[in-house]
Amino acid sequence: MAQMIFVNLPVTDLARSIAFYEAVGFTADQQFRDDRAQMMTLSENIHVMIMTYDRFADFTPKAIPDAKTSAQVLICTSADSRDDVDAIIGRAAAAGAKLDPTPQQDMGGFMYGRSYEDPDGHIFEVMWMDVAAATAAFEAQPA
Image (cartoon, rainbow, N blue to C red):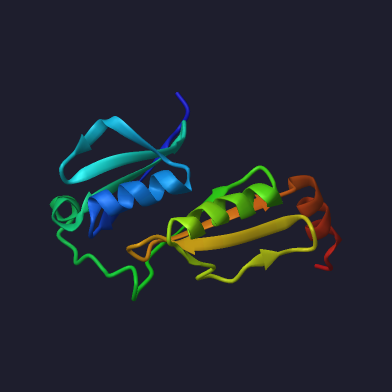
């Protein structure tokens, strides 16, 4: 079985967050949901479990930071092309995301990335990279 990633995020309004993530391109998995949590699937191996703050608190005794004022993690997913990066960012914008809360990246044509912030302040970066061109560019740099 391939490894999978499950990112758990606290949200203030579960219904709003479900609608946001669906608009960006995630699918709500109806098998894993209740009135305080919803599994959102991006791909076969990438899932985001959005949970109300009270449900999230069931998993940790630590304080839950406000993602609008502090950052603990930046979540980065890949895209198949520069156009796909822009399409995902476009869907996020249409859903009300704050765009490019982190610097845009355009590395000489071999890597391109942008980002968006969800309604609760969690930052998702979306990047495309031509691995062969990136490897050649890094190998050409002086040591």
